[in-house]
Image 1 (cartoon, rainbow, N blue to C red):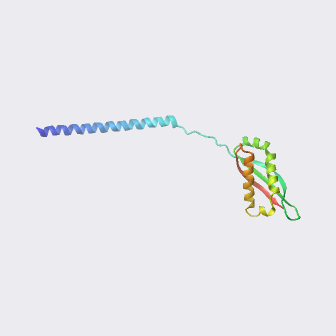
Image 2 (cartoon, rainbow, N blue to C red; image 1 turned 30 degrees about the vertical axis):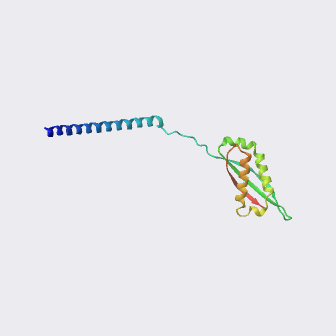
Image 3 (cartoon, rainbow, N blue to C red; image 1 turned 120 degrees about the vertical axis):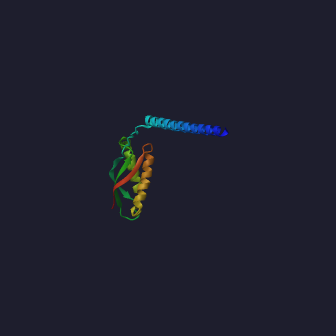
Length: 152
């Protein structure tokens, strides 16, 4: 008799395992489906963000005398562009362009011709870029480009 009781218990536990497995599979499918529907509803279409393209504002060409220890005068002609975040910033910078030109003039006047040789142009650009960024402080200036730099 005990053998028959063991068989009944073994058969019953197999059905229980099978039932629990089926419930677990159905529960996993339900959770997965719910997560898919929630994600599709809340994160369905990717949001398109309009990125403003940078705007290059030309600075009028200017000439300056360089600081020379010798008796003859040296001149520099500079044409540059400011790279701004957007075209809306350009209107505000145009109103402050005299300050930017003054920065160029005063910095160039204190520069010797030999300081512009080699990597001196890079140092000139970095120094002017830092000063221009400070003067135009609330307006983000991305970069400064020299389009012409002629030393005579």
